[in-house]
Image (tube, rainbow, N blue to C red; front, top):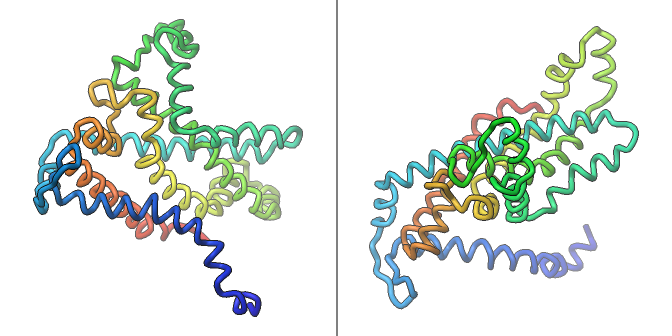
Amino acid sequence: MATFQRHRVTPWLLLAPQLAVVAIFFFWPAAQAMLQAFYVEDPFGLGRTFVAFENFARVLASAEYYRALGITVTFSAGVALGAMALALLLAVLADRVIKGAGAYKALLIWPYAVAPAVAGVLWGFMLDPELGLISAGLGALDIDWNHQLNGGQAMALVVMASIWKQMSYNFVFFLAGLQAIPRSLLEAAAIDGAGPWRRFWTITFPLLSPTSFFLLVMNSVYAFFETFGTIDATTAGGPGGATRTLVYKVFEDGFIGYDLGSSAAQSVLLMGLVGLLTLLQFRYLERRVQY
């Protein structure tokens, strides 16, 4: 403590690069988007007109916006719950592995190092209607796979690619949580006659609730914001807008349609929606967490 009091400037110098990155790449663009939402701008940036809340009113009156909202809710629920459920299953299995546990865990963690766009390209290749190995296997089972024409299959593709990308992140946290549970509790329950399934639901799962709650918040944010690269590389929002989530609609309206005011208003609404969702999670779900 005395060392820090003698060198009060040093901690700020060490934090300065990270604070600068956050300010330049998060706070400044967020402030620009909030300001832009109240203007109608020339596509080439030559002029703008103040229109107050007109952009917000136009977005909230659009049927296409509510369609994208429904797609986003479906997509986010599938990704968050699917990635957490599969990661928990793999973590439970990995926690029991004795031989080769290090290699098994390393292989499960590797996908997290893959960029979302690369994950989308990989899954796009595997499920390509003409060249994909998985689509060929589905064809052998008389399942006609073509995500370029079928909206449901396109949604399944982006959900699977997003789950695969995020599963490793969840796996690390669940495995750490499982290894922190005292073995004596599980052994005492086993001596009392509790089977593996009952031990999991009455001891393991409740003790993992802080980890599960943290991952639910992080996975929700991931599904809403960080899956843009996966969607753009696999379906580009198609076919017919079947995979156009809110974040992809912000990109389309702003960078393809050059409607910068509407795009900025949508980004502000999306930020508010995710903030409200996080608040509700802390307000109602945190009560069930057992610390």
